[in-house]
Structures are given as C-alpha cells and as structure tokens.
Image (cartoon, rainbow, N blue to C red; front, side):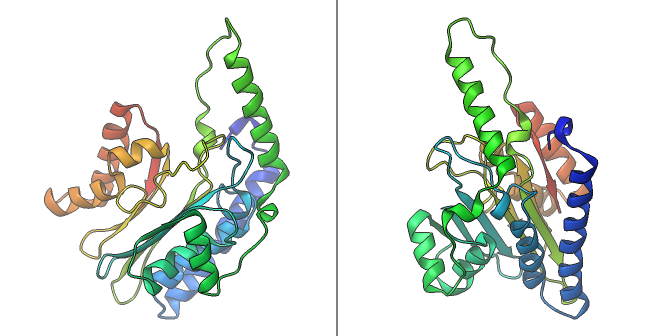
Length: 267
C-alpha cells in the first residue's frame, strides 16, 4: 500500500472489508464447514471490494487492461486449481476451485480459463466491470513515468514496491483438521501482456498440505516463482522440522531479501 495516499477513510474501508471477509470465513468454520468453503467465501468478499488488487480492484496492465490470476489448494490430498490472465471472470477464486474440482487439470489461462468458467456456470462480466478510477489514475501515472525514463538523461527511479502489493489471500483450518489456502490478484501495475505472476502457480504463491501448513503469498511474483516460496515454507517444516513462524521468517527475511525480492506470506 502506498502510505503517502493512504487516508483515514482508506484505512477504515480496508479494515471494514477485512473484517467482513474474516467473519464470512469464520461463520463457515464455526458451523462445521470446510476450510475450502471458508477460503473461497473470504476471498470472494475481497475480490468484490475495490480496495484490493484482486477482482474489482485489480491493477491495469501496460495495455490498460485488467488481467486476473487466482489459485486454491486443498491440503487433504494436495489437490489444486488455478486460472491466469482472465478478463471476464467476476471471481477468479471460484474459477480456480472449479478447475480443481471439475477438471483433471490444475491451471487454465486466458480464453481457455474463461470458457471453462462459463461452461461451469460461473458469473461472467464485461471487462469494464473491473475499472476503478483509483487504478486508472495509477496506470496513467505509471505510463508517464515510463515515458520519462525513456528520455535521454532521465534520472533512474526505483520501481515502486506498492505496484505489486495488495494481492489478497486466505488460509483456513477446519474442525476436521483440513487446511486450505487461496490467493487472488490483478498482478503488477503496468505488467506486460500475458505476464503471469506467482499467485496462480502452486508452490510459488499458494500451497496447502495437511501435514505442514497452508501458505498464501504477496509481493514481487518473479522472485516468489524462482524460489518456490509457498512450497519452501512447507518443505522447511516437513524436512527440517521448523515451526511455521521460523520457516516463514527464514524464507521471507533471508531467502527473498538476499535475492532482491520483497513481499510477505500468511500461513
């Protein structure tokens, strides 16, 4: 989040939506429902809210379009589903779950993912649905920055880390001991056409295993892919007998930082 433009009203909206999301997931778990249902319900609320970089609030690509990614994983038998680069699926997390449960595959992208979602009765929308004024201003600012960088003798500015934060994620543990994790994002502001980040890649942005943990990630996706961040946290718990706190801290504060990447995980 860009703290410079983070007003008290923004903070109130973030907290209110996060509370709504938490309560939706908690109600399912409290009623004996599954971790998968809780993760989906909590994530849908965040996808429908314009504050987050997922669903309705997704950032724009360099071509001024919204391309969305999501994944979900069930820790019981390591089943997973994901979609990448969708532009007409209202709730990508629902599409990811449909891929997991209604197909023999794990990942669908672009038009194939959209056709699959439509064939399975999911709500489809016009791409204009994802437009928000805040993100539109953000991409216009980004485009001007790129023009300035291209000019001779232009001062080099570091990339703004805020451009790839506010991905949403959820991890849940139900009364039967099952863990599920899900992640949904619009990716990076100004990303190139067809770019896929870590969010829909199982083991990079999302992972769940009942024997270890459920993990959902946010940050600079290329680094999370290269270092298989979500899986690495689980693997450290499984093979090195580390606690989730210790494993996550090592991966985020040491592995990622040494590589030059930034981000965080929930688990």
